[in-house]
Length: 305
Image (cartoon, rainbow, N blue to C red; front, side, top):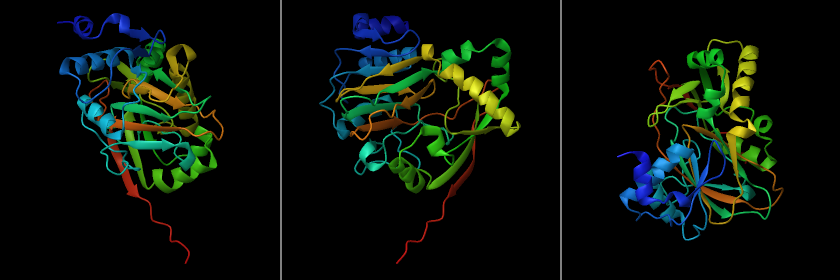
């Protein structure tokens, strides 16, 4: 049975609304729950693989428990590697703009970073705070053939120890949270710049804010290449932008996307909660796997008496 037939038998195509040509679809008339049938879960996963990120409006019935009951149907829940999980949950990460946690990127500084994220809008400001996703499979195909061949052979070092303020235009509260919590353990992981998606077979680019350098290349040359490849990922034609409402849920495939939370809501309050699904160690086009080279806990700074 084809994927199309399976989806059509469970989720009417009229209920799957594309939000951009290359990425993103909204699914209507589904109430997310841990009690959904296996057929519906399979169909949701198939739509996710096709569109990379999917959206559900009007899911205000979800709380942390029910969000995780649904998310675990997509795979094994896993906490954030440095921040951990909200007390009483297996994987929920609260991103609260009022407590220095307004944004978070996919954690490519570990080897098997989460494959799927399930994000719920809890407190949404009246303006701003959109999230943008990019299709990294389409970005790879957009590269001219010589650049695709080069990307296939490159590896990059990803680390959570980087200049957060410069790369993300962080607020003072965000920077404090980053320094005290996010980098409590320092990781350095080598990933292929191009990974083979384990479910679709697509080749996708693995880049983003955590890239420190390319293996075997001088820093200056590597930065030029990074900017070039990243520009294909973030090209507007390759993105979808979601304007949140309270109770919305977004689910995305970290193996085929990058995302960016737009910090344009000033001092308004924004809270979202994210559950994450454990992923696989990326495999390069020549069959090698990512590897974490460094995992070191930072010494605790002594507090003054």
